[in-house]
Amino acid sequence: MERIGVIGLGAMGKPMARNLLKAGYTVNLLTRTRAKVEDLLAQGGEWRDTPKEIARASDVVITNLPDTPDVEQVIAGKDGVFDGARPGTLIIDMGTILPVAAQKLANAAQARGCDFLDAPVSGGDVGAQNATLTIMVGGSEQAFQRALPVLQKLGKTITWMGGPGAGQVTKAANQIITSINIAAVSEALVFAAKAGVDPARVRQALMGGAAYSRSLEIHGARMLERNFTPGFRMRLHRKDLDIVMLTGKEYGAALPVTAQVREMMTATMNAGQADLDNSSLVLLLERLSGIQAKNS
Image 1 (cartoon, rainbow, N blue to C red):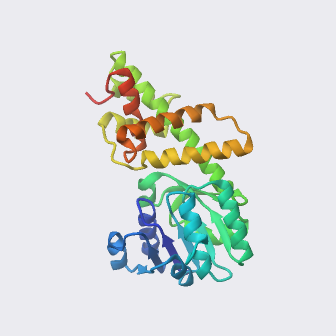
Image 2: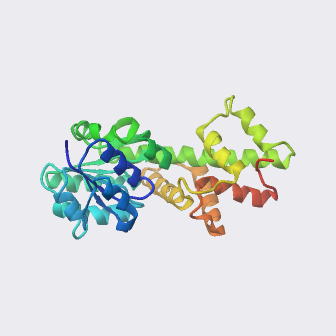
Image 3: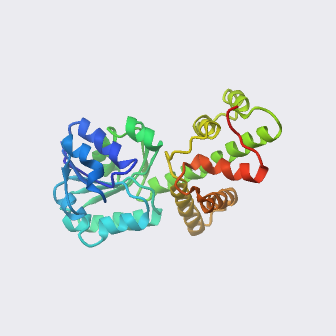
């Protein structure tokens, strides 16, 4: 079994590392605060002090970091993964970054005799915990086949999308649909409440019709229950929409609805909800309409 390094052990990376340990892999660990992963170390994980050391001790390096600059620094910066990688090292970035950045990292990896895959995920922290993530992979098909046994310990639906950056384009498309669905569910439930109809009953009725979506099921329940404990933080979803808009500009894609939802998320963040769940978008609509959509 290949030795695996995992860099970034937050809400997504930590359960991923735990599932790899359960599967019997040797797992090298690195995150900002060691104390947060003492449980993983007790389960057999091995701590390394720098990305360079992670790469030296691993055959496969997985990064799960917040944004493009973080990934670029950890992989290509001083004492980064590239500094410790040997020819044949496979680097898999599972965060959400700019497609063009993924392409540049893939080219830089190839020049060093390494492989790079962009493999962003969907499914949130619950999917990471249960190893049921949807994983969208860009890079060479040969590298994908090598990575597949590892990815199968992390996710359920794993699809090779094409060359470098293709996984990130797919994730951007996912975030377009998800964000618009959350906004639509927010509007629908607030609309029902304002009209005097129980929004919980409205949601239940719509769950069996053409309006059904995972957002109606999961985010709608969170809205009605007033449960905004973050599964996926608002600021991270807005960051993903920044990536969408920059990529859309690069390719000349019109994204009018996404642009509107991005501004709604910005307004929600400015109201102090940046670290709440993305379903807290409903709070903006509630403020605008002067009513709450919640369970009675």
